[in-house]
Image (cartoon, rainbow, N blue to C red):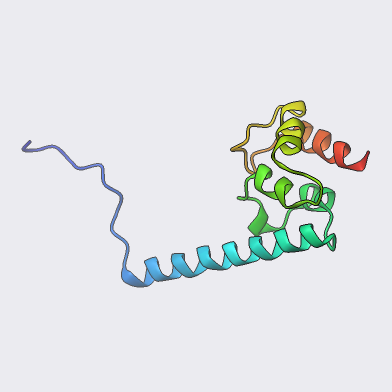
Length: 108
């Protein structure tokens, strides 16, 4: 239709796209390393939730819980439900109440 503006996002240069891709890959690598450290017990989930590193802030809480030993899908769902945290919630998106309650569950 003539005269209507398109609502498309602005085009990015090739360099901008490559930089964003490198950054996303770096964050994924760091998160994978964090999950391995959680699984091995070298890092505690309570510490990650209390003071999350920048790369962990966009991770889903459920994904991090599943990396913890002895926490499977049902236990993770139970913890999230008890703290009223949606399965899709990111670490950054948690309220202080949710963060505190979840940390307390792991300290028991």
